[in-house]
Image (cartoon, rainbow, N blue to C red):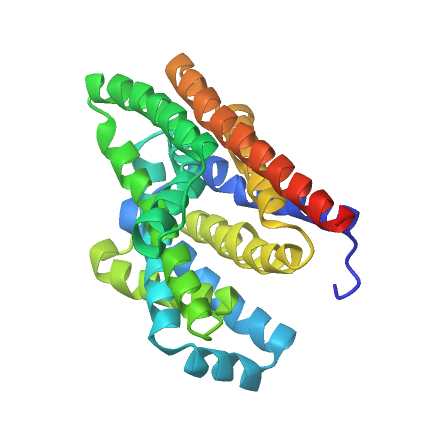
Length: 301
């Protein structure tokens, strides 16, 4: 992977989003596992998978060193990951895949707000506009679901982008103070915490062998492998590219749940989702153009 080209990194990131997108359709085929038990098994298999992948990839001594040198920040990051893992899977058992994925798409905008509040980053007008438009889209989705008495799942899903924004703040704060956090060991910590916290809530376990095999697939193929590959891609791709490509998870996830589980997204969800995705795409594209223009100006000088 050290000689990964830009083009191959793009296609690899597309494959990563496709793997991420399998969570919804696979969850719909579970027989007995529900709510916290779904989270427990996926987090457990994610932890086991990363416990094997990381030593092979980075070396056991290197992984232990990164965890020790990460200080409290890597553990705070791990807590954020555990909230994301838990809220995501619980939300999938409470509402539709489309609702969960579109709500998760608010992550970059929540991150921008968090950076403004806690780090003092100034937000350009385009980002404020994107926040307003995306907020309108989510509000439309919320209003519909609340009328149907199904708002709890969307509220739980909202914890995912909020935790992601907190995670980014922790990582940036650590980096500013000379403590660079390796996100993959942080993911491992998050998986262990998630499994430990949800086990008592999931007891007594009721998952069938069929359920366990599907949740093992999610732990390895839907989370552990793509998380590792996304870190590799991020070394080649720029942040705006990763953000835009990550939006494919929403499209893939809704399509897979539709085709593989007959979960047809509601018109309101598609409308609200279009506003959210459109706001994100335009914001990232304008930001990309602005940075490119500045770079060309500096080169001309």
